[in-house]
Length: 557
Image (cartoon, rainbow, N blue to C red):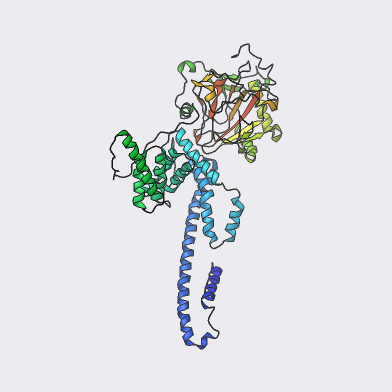
């Protein structure tokens, strides 16, 4: 800093004295002017020092906060990011707040810091990441019926941590929803931001800004009286607000018109503190949404005592494959019809670690096939990253593939590569089929709904034609991590929920023996509420199974 102070003082002296004549010492009159010039310079210098100290104090405070935070986060990165609020705030810090620190430091460039920032910036999340993390929190909020206040305080089912959302965090959440025309969530989070602000929490955002977004969002939710009340409060705080006055007149005209049509008197606005509103979540295009989300919460399970009595556990031994003579596989029934089984000790910790190690550098956003174009694309109903592993990558992949063949008795030579998937904050895959559907009967129904109305129920008879191995006859799903909360595999059609258990695997057939699709196997990966979910799956195809799973004689065999 000493060198920069010298140049600052020299520059300022040059600026103030550039027009003085030489040999100043020869005139006391001119020298007396320099006394006052020097006084002004000292005052300017002190102001500069105060500004630098203030800036340095801000940077020190930020560094101290981040130092404590990174000690916690680096001690167990996956455990830290298992809490969705931590994941969201990481996206926000790296996308927004670090840029503010960089701008602050750039006022007096520090080469080491800036060069370091330049190296790492290419790996920082961008605005899309921050928005995606915010939407993930809202998805968790909906699926697991979490109120905004509990969420902002880090209170999740079975978890209470210091991962809290500030007034500004809540405002940014609401603004994300607002910009997406999602006024339901905009209201929830703007209300929470306002509540915390009124409770005395510190913030950068002003009350006027919150009321501006909240009042319009409430109007979009169809609550004119409350929109007027909130806008009046906004005008009272900031009478010069560019939109508030116009919005207020517009809202009042609409309300008067509605009241006149109903012959109802106008009620003056309340002077009481602003009351929080309660609104219903809008319906979307997924008709089984309620059943799906209820199963994710552990509600609506259709496991009865009669069904439970038909479930058994057993050992898979050498009857199917001699390799199992030395290490029989423990098999448990998870569901009777369709038959879903779980295999215990399918993968060891060492194998899981190796598979993760191989997959991490290759992870990319998971895609789905567009039913109209046939092109693979990303979708908001599938939020995860995946990688495909071949036997040539490592002996562990060959070993796992062989084990799947030994256990199922099916030929995996025509199966797809081993797919590894990692679900991050709010990671999910909404209800879908694993198999390719043929043109369907318009009268076919699932869960009381016509098949044609379902999201993702699409006519895609040629989805796997390029593979030349037929349809996906079965799914083998390995769980490679425990999940503290959420992340279950659910089957909305018959009310089953299967919890991830590290090292185990579940298996089911997607097709009947006739080759017809079993539409009951429509399933979903619930959003991960707390934890980090790793899975790997093997999709086994029809070709090669002709003598291992002979065809049935009826459509539903």
